Length: 462
Ligand SMILES: Nc1ncnc2c1ncn2[C@@H]1O[C@H](COP(=O)(O)OP(=O)(O)O)[C@@H](O)[C@H]1O
Ligand SMILES: O=C(CO)[C@@H](O)[C@H](O)COP(=O)(O)O
Image (tube, protein in one colour):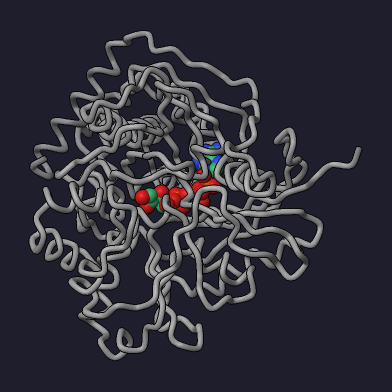
């Protein structure tokens, strides 16, 4: 019997990945990828070129796009971007985020919207555009997110674009508890009411491609990963990609006035409380560049370093940071001595600093009542053996590492199979066997966490 082939697309910060998948079993049949330009703002056409460079999609019965969240794609009446898309890791809208927090109050944002403005979120970027380029803001006809814009292009630029609840929940002008856009919030930020994409139901189709393939609603990339992993209660995902994210599906909605935990929606009609960091896998690539080694050599150095890096502590807020909300922060290295200043300890300190930022985020998620009995570690940074081995100790929690795969794109494929099937639930695809790392309660891990916390408080006051 012939297979039904579907495609899952992950348009993330650094690249576009395309998986072809068996709709019935979830078996990955092929994977391709193409890079995006570096930077925190980009012309969306680069995403389209990265997708198109991987060939047409005429062979698939259905497809779905999962993409980096929050990017501001502001189009004029001709459908042309009035400005490069500001991405989730662009921090220029920090002043606007502060003003929006103060205008409504953090408690109200958390209660009424589900998230508290930080520079990552779309609403702050629109406020930046209105304040700094009013002549461009006046030309804005409609505002989309990265996954919306790619879906819109694949569907042939329909009059009304579409999105889904998971990605809408990251804009700041969509109310998760009410399930609707808040035009008053949009006008508070942007002073205008541009057209917004229609929010589709989880398994609702967005349209069809020129070759007739069904296009599913799509979703934010972390909701895609959750869908791709088929999580069970008590499992928390920690993804070490361009962003570091810590999240778990939740029946209960999380309200965190501190803004650290975003009360996002997931792609199945429930909730996805999430914390994100700006400095994740790029902490490792920056360290490899500094040491003039490649990532495998960095891994070997880090494995050869002292378990606690000899007391070296790196706080890797290299591009500012989102969790904690320190958009203008820079990194800090403490504990340097003539004895411990070695390439091995520097490499080790970059691994430990990365993991400590994620450990901080994990404890904040737990403080909101989210159960975290097992960590599912994914993302490019999880390919590092030294990261994997240290993670269970630093998190003091069991860590499982599924086989290397593009789980965001796999989740998009699962959503496409769901939309194609017309079923009430997504298809059941089994997660492959995993590697498991158990914490041993190593004393060095508690010392590393303690040093990191002390240095963070001493340097940044929080
Ligand atoms: N073996 C490895 N060790 C450390 N980092 C890695 C390794 N392989 C890939 N990476 C990093 O993972 C990142 C890409 O991961 P990915 O999850 O695809 O990110 P994103 O989805 O945000 O684009 C890159 O920054 C890359 O340097
Ligand atoms: O901002 C967030 C989540 O709130 C990030 O997770 C972005 O969605 C970018 O994702 P990656 O490119 O790292 O996959």
